[in-house]
Length: 200
Length: 202
Image (cartoon, rainbow over all chains, first blue to last red; front, top):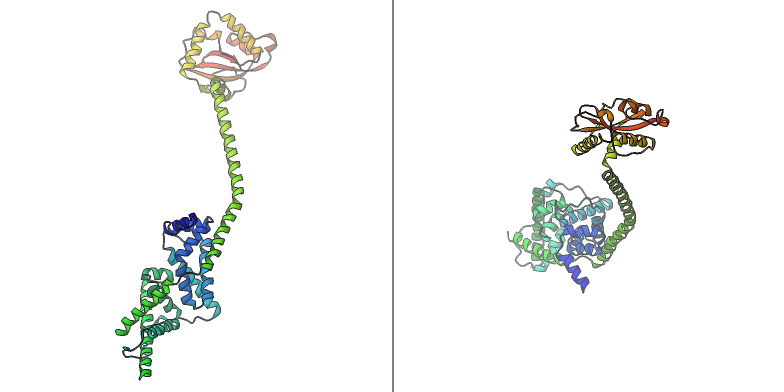
């Protein structure tokens, strides 16, 4: 019971900076509290980016271990721990991607010129099909666009927070999100048209 | 436009599902263990730090103790300390080079003693000679040569190395065995540069 109370106190009352200091001093409880607080975000982001649960777990673990080893990097005065952790996760993901395959050079200009494959309304598209189509469309997005969608649309981060995670200007976040949504909308329209055609 | 709005709604729905996903619990144990291992590492470093602190504390205590002892000795015999701190000029009979200035209380005491000593000067002469031969470090003895001089407002203590025979020029008689011997003496010198009293250091 006392353990639960203590844990609740760690999870609820202490700031990220205080928990981080306690974890550095060797408090497993503080580390667990930090993981409970931010582990979900890091894991979800890693999973969405890698589309592999095992890789996402590895990245998540590395990110939190970095909290103990890269003590000089995190500065509570400069930004939120969540964005710092997400930034580490992102770098871990990109490092793996570069090791495993060629990520493909991402050209901001060419991405801007992506066109919607089809036009037309989709009144009869079923909801779950639309959701599945968007999910599939997200998986097909280039990683730089996908990470913006994950942070801003799924995690509901502000542009500023996303910019901090991605280490890019806020304007870049805005433009990438706009392009990603345009592409998803295009995919969605194409999918809806396809379904309508089948129904006929 | 419908598709755009629909896309926003779909993204919101995916987002809700997405955020409901938690971190795998099995990682928590590993991370907790990693943090705990730091505690062990810190604990292993602690004895070394403790020893360092203990050594520093002992050194500080020794320094403080020596300071207290020094202060205590200083408080016990300020006159002697003054005498010791004065650099001793090489055997010159002239006590003029003034090195230290005593307080007004000391000056008054010595002057009063000098006046009082006028009555039984012979006894004091004898006593001073005894002191010279006994290598003592005792009170100042008024010099016969200072008789008739005005009382000094300020006195300086001057340490001088001299021969026993030199005592004669100050009106003191040295015992025969001390005539040729070199001794260290302190003179109480007035602000006019004239010696008022003497004591033999060794």
